[in-house]
Image 1 (cartoon, rainbow, N blue to C red):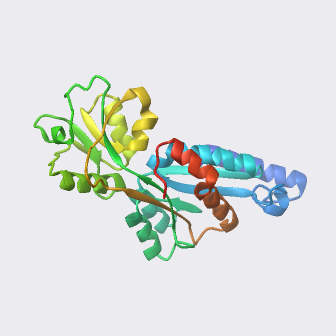
Image 2: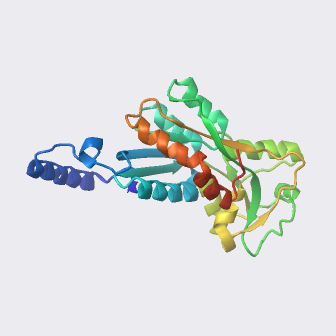
Image 3: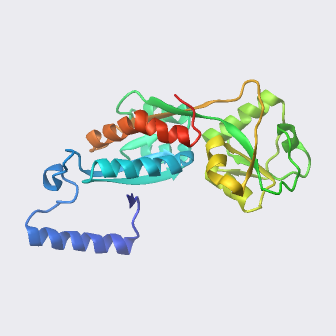
Length: 267
């Protein structure tokens, strides 16, 4: 897998090296062209995947699988809050695939006429409370997050995990006054694991991935908010075949096992 953005100096060096190799071989642009790479799977080139921060662990694993199955293909991954990613895409960022943590942000891509196909739901997720292992604020229930003096961190409302938090708070009748609102769920988890917060609201999958660094406390709601994760190829992509193959992996049996093992719910 390659990082999405190279440092200027490194990028310049890479361009010089590519030009030199092309001059030696007499075949310019040989890096990403199917005919030049000759992948045994028939797929080659670089695929850029923009995915919600909560998918970092699973999509990193899926990208490694994809590259193994398609040895002439490379995957660049970019993780952040879904609202940030869709803004970047609609403003011209070169993404081939977009995987959102909710349908609201995917709708922004569709409204911009930049979804190549009808997005496919490939996973679901729920929120949970996480606290440091020693639970300094003695959090036992969702209602405890509303106690004065408790330092709670949540996602901002425009981010899927923030919208879910607002919905769950309304469902439980709990008023949370966070000390910080983050633009992705990874930042919320980081505030808790670093001891900067007494508690945070993150996805069940993030709590699972954090292991012993946090203690998870279920919300215990009768009607919890279920975030549905959609994925689609971006219409401006020049790598539609690669994009569709990656989507097929994520939505297929292999991808579903990886997602299920990480704690995601079935579509």
